[in-house]
Image 1 (cartoon, rainbow, N blue to C red):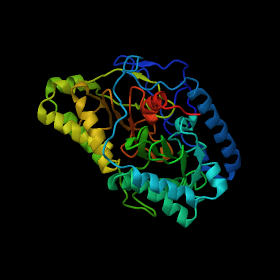
Image 2: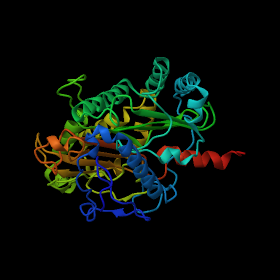
Image 3: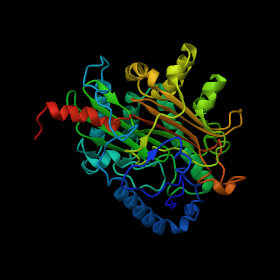
Image 4: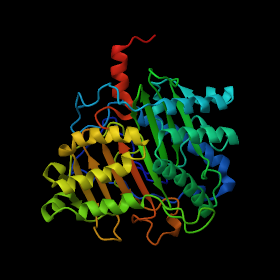
Length: 417
């Protein structure tokens, strides 16, 4: 594998999505991150050009395949996602999006708005170097920023908004620690809008930046908020402007609690490998078509208390959506709880680093303690994962990331010019 970036190192894209099974999971391990060369601000113009080239390269390779979606065996399972009324209004999100667009200049709107089926949906990346489209918080006026945060407030729960805002703050902490305010910082997050905000036609928006990605698709009163990415390095600020800010501790600790709640036989099935030495997330940027089986311990064999605990862990992630649509999604998750698996890589004590995955036909969640990246020079062992660098990903398998299955069904039943 060729290391092409300096956050979570990403392997070269293959034309055919690899099948990632229990046996092949370890051979697919992503190698460690390397120290970011952007620690030298005087090279910013050259670095910006290099980053543009790297971004274009990732897009070209990553979008070679048409979108299919994550699958367990290479085939999309049909009939999982239907168009229906949820009874939860999306009017607040639509109004907030209209207010945000109205706050922009014509030039800003022209580079922020895309067609609802534009490939721009799939052009997101966690890495800080990625060249993004749309309008950034950095260039926004105060009133535009207020409108942008109003959009996030309308679509996220209080917890989800706090998480997103704190990720942005911790990116400022990272800029302070690396003395790089050119490519890192609190306001380097971009918004694009796909389609026109509508009560009946499909539309959505994307927030894209380092360690924070929200894809938010709307059709009527239905919402799909995946792919969703949350992470940080560091996850706790011990100095600087935002000293004391800390994120993803519940996701970390309650994941371990879930493993420890399993009996000996269940835990033996869940633990794919007791040792974690690399990065294991499999469904980050440009991995829309990964084939990934249901590995680990199966919730169909769990007791009712164990199932309840697993659902509460899933809700930590789903609950970043507004409360109403989170309930709708959790109802969907509950219908498939018997087909949900829980897998683990790493240790199981209070100081361990680990990866865990929750996987069902309708949701996939990955949590990963990552190797040091931008802070590698400060690490005791830059090759080993740390609790100060976390990546979390939420996906909708079987073709409905970005709401694409709902969009497909909408096009089948509606004539569009």
